[in-house]
Amino acid sequence: MTKVFICNIGDLDQGEMRKFETEAGVLLAFNRDGEYFVTDDMCTHATASLSEGDFFDDTVSCPKHWGEFNIMTGEATAAPCKKPLRTYRVLIENDDVYVDSELEAIDAI
Image (cartoon, rainbow, N blue to C red):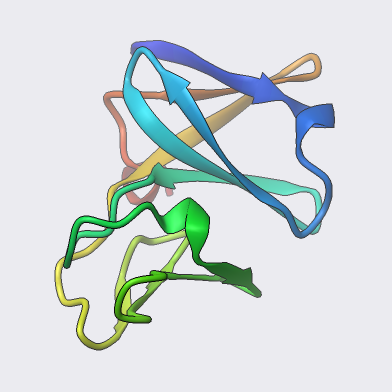
């Protein structure tokens, strides 16, 4: 396991997403009703930062062509996106949010 620090839990309010530059690359963290999820920040369809899109329910939308992804599974849920988004297994220790950069969220289920 390669544990990578993302942020402190106080850095993300409920319903908020934020981009973080980490040793694993540029990642996007989400606080969905007190649950934390982390994905790659870059859309798999076109070169666009998902942090500039919208976050609602379990979905992040791309600001370029409005494709959508499920933040828990990475599944592309709206065209034109087809390729899944990379997700990460989230670890909470004390008040810190980490990811296991070697394990996708879906692998942890």
